[in-house]
Length: 234
Ligand code: MN
Image 1 (cartoon, helix red, strand yellow):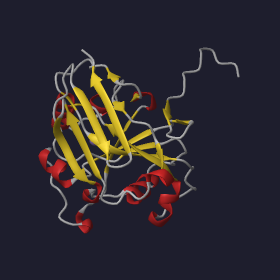
Image 2 (cartoon, protein in one colour; image 1 turned 180 degrees about the vertical axis):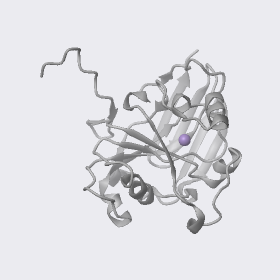
Image 3 (tube, protein in one colour; image 1 turned 135 degrees about the vertical axis):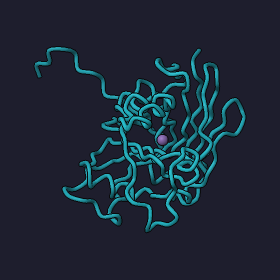
Image 4 (tube, rainbow, N blue to C red; image 1 turned 90 degrees about the vertical axis):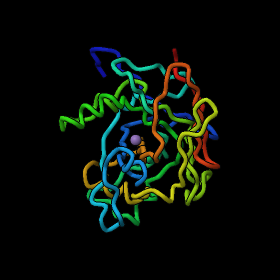
């Protein structure tokens, strides 16, 4: 290889039990809990038949934060937390659309993360019909806990996803409230992208999103699987 600059490092997540998971892409799902869709002023589907297609956006792979300290980002006065189930893909999807019934076989493991959002920039973008990239895909916008292999995690079922900030509850919902579950989301993503080993999927957040300020401490939990503890610098 004759790189003309040093190759950027590959972002990696620690895996419970040993080893590291190299991150390829980070896909995110918007509006995947009805109560959050409503709090953001969107209409929530009344039934699966009416849910349409999921909202997707991306973050750069090197947006992950694996330490406890999260820098307060520039260019915002309204940084928001969104606690989310994070799914790690361990195998490349075959060519073509991935059937829902084959999707689970691609999953390497699960963890919990925060989809940090510059809510003020997102609101301005939405008002003008512009993309969300600067609101969502900024540096250090994806704190994540260690990755837990699916075999060790067990079934997701109705496990609770929750977030406390400074010891106070902010967000809490069972995964059974997801509008689109994990196999359904992987199926939908496969219509748009070639899923690859190394991809992460942030599955969307329940209601209760609110501001994180410098000095705040957060604790996010995916019941019985993973805990993410950290603080906002400042
Ligand atoms: Mn989100």
